[in-house]
Length: 366
Image 1 (cartoon, rainbow, N blue to C red):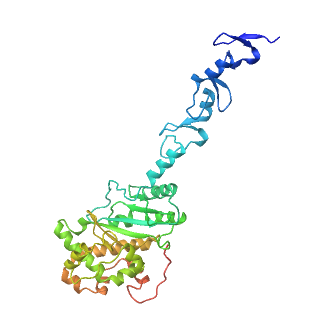
Image 2: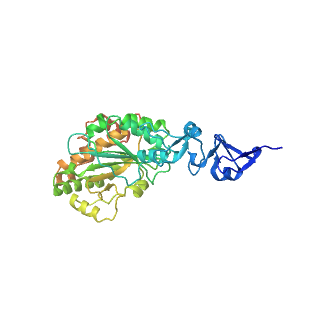
């Protein structure tokens, strides 16, 4: 005869074979169904009130402590072996929060504008936008580049760019030429980008844009406008030479950095540029409030090319600030070259057949 035993909850007697064990209690089928549930991990029966899981998991206390944790961002319960732990934090994340946090911290949207950090003494600051492509829009890659670029100061941030196939846009905070040359770790950043499979010159989608602070052209608005007019005039007057220096084709410039068309004097040149309707996709972009942007240069992962570009832009600023309109109108390209003494820039000009007609070894750009 089957022995009966009372339910620990309702007291009704049932054959022992029909009772369900929960902790130290024996429960009848009805009470077991109402009051208990099985742990997803070990299948142990527990009271519903003792469930340490969430809407997706049923967990006893022991399994919850042994196998699970919670995301510090969204509170979701996750298996410990599926949790993510950022190197720069003691927090724990689920994959969705980790990916969002890492990506947003490393790669910003194209319209992102941080609080700027100015580096170097003086008023002539250059901000570089360098596009790199075909190596992935990867948060891990971006983080590595940021770690290198920002190891001694807040120098670099990274954005997306719709003109790229699968790449990143590296953007520096405003820096003097001396800071770019001696403090910004460009050599290491470019080497790391190459090691990760990125291209710039050879990708054909990439530009190297240089922003120049308006204060570099004078302290008053009129001084700035007069000097900027000379810079735009210089670019138009020496368009064939600037085109060769840029490493771009005419069709590429027509799409991303079109010329305004030459005028007879700097003032007319600036007036024409402002009324051209070209917008930001001009060789010299005048639409920003605090900077002018020179957009004609093709991207590069070659250090000397990048630094030569910055040296050239610096000379354009010198010409714009120091020469009169008449002196600039009279100046020839060779007259401009006589102002240049930097060996790296001279080497680059020779490579582009813009200095003297003598053979030089040319390394392929990347």
